[in-house]
Length: 484
Image (cartoon, rainbow, N blue to C red; front, side):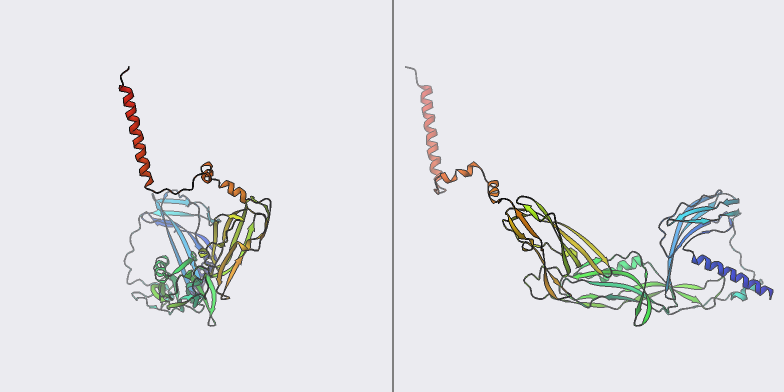
């Protein structure tokens, strides 16, 4: 009876220590008190349910030498909950036998100071490999904790209440209209199987190659950190883990097909006989497969510009440097298209040109946001203009952008409502003077307006040759003529 009480107290203390350590988000674990010359002492930094982003240098220990680090990470799904750990392990090898003291130290881990009490490490002779167990020795604790000699452990495969799904937020779209594709792993709140992701980056690379359609413009949401999001499907609670998400904008009328894809996870089998010291789970693998998906693409309604209009839900914002100007005074005008859709595909607004303004090609900037299962943003067209004629002008007569709204299923026009008041003298005459081509062109009206044939050049050449020959003859006679 006293022994049982002692054992029960031991278990309660041990379980209490385990629960305390589980509740810590960041911890430092020290290696054993006694090691052999052929064994390593370790200091392990562990971060639970977060990334290990930064940490200080590990402390030096007199008599032990640092010999490299190793790291590990895991993500577990248990009872519909997710937990993750990430660790960095510093190894120390003893340089000689003896007793060495690791002083208390503080490490800054993820900008948080964590204390360790230190400890004394005793290094002894090299440890021999464990000898074969004496068959006549019997440990009374074995029966208590279910540990049997020479009896292999059996493991049970627990069915996973989970599935992989590729979903789209729309089943049919207009040509150029965006839709969002999400690949998620769902774990039921009632799930009892223990699982974790396996080589997710490598698997995801192959998955994306399969599902990315060739006839679409892609805006990838670039999921860097997989997080848990509670959802309800058919009245049942699940935890959703988004693995991949992107918005696609069809470029032609071909239907878009997404094939079935596979995702392999580590799934643990549970020991049939739970033991205190033994291995209570065994690593195995299970493959989850999504269902194929298809999206239909519809053509836009008839319109003279349907081949070039952007598709989305847009509105216009604009800014101008000034509305009351003088002729020849430059101005800056921002035509800003903002909304939901393929921002990259928005082309320049239609610009009407006349002699009243000189308007130059715009500088273009765009900002794209990918979040909340959609693509939003804005595109700014910055114009520089100079008025040439005084008067009152509505910029809506000069700048406009036609687009198709798939929600209302109508064409609409973004048109400026800014009015410019231009004063001063006309700049048209100055433009004519600026285009003066010089005195050569000024004498053109005074020259004969006579068309010469191409063959007239031959007669001119003959006359010129006769004239040159005559001059040579006269010069020769003059030189050789005898003086009288």
